[in-house]
Length: 125
Image (cartoon, one colour):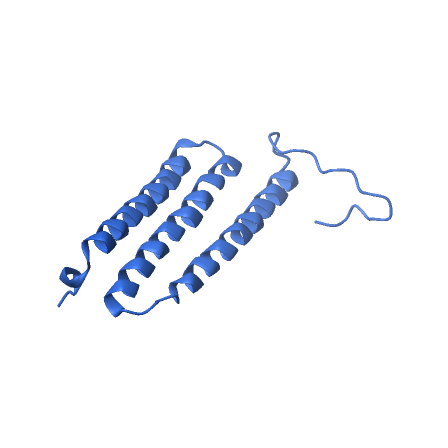
């Protein structure tokens, strides 16, 4: 049984607006993934869509369930924090792995390795 009928109009409208915003941002990230051509261009669109889209969906969940439960429901913030922290880290790991692979294979569209700074060896990754 759904308790959505017990939700006040202001909370229902705010929840609906935030869900639509989150879904729209995630859709933009997905469209960016399809539209861009190279890997390094493609990794940015879903990252932004995931971060901001998840933020809007988490806010919608907080508003809805806080109003239905008559108490603040804040554990959804953990979901937002984990997605916000892990998405850029995953992006960096994927980008560095692809950059290393492309440099090893000698692909022409990869930026050259920067020169080593004084006191560093050039054998690092």
